[in-house]
Image 1 (cartoon, rainbow, N blue to C red):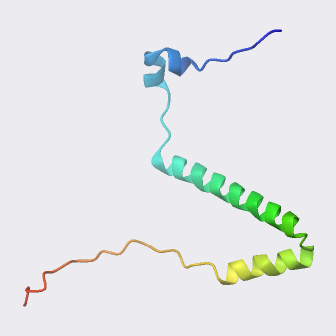
Image 2: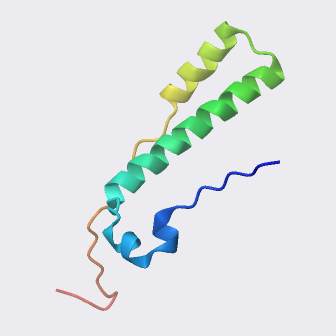
Image 3: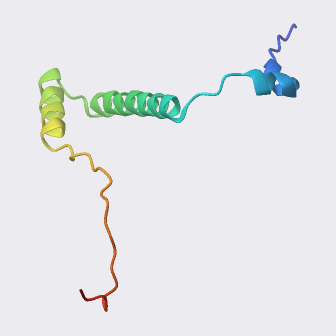
Length: 87
């Protein structure tokens, strides 16, 4: 029996790790969002299959999800003042 082992060079050689390109935060975020989307779709397919939903029922659910999806929340600059702060 033969076992093939692949070792990432960056794990063995610290200098290779330093030379390896670093993904930016935005790249990581896009990758995570993509993985979340794929997972959501997989969960949806499994639930549809579990309940034996027809294509028409699936479309109704998708349309309802779109209509009721929450509005994205964006950070707001809020200045806090003390209760005793009178101007």
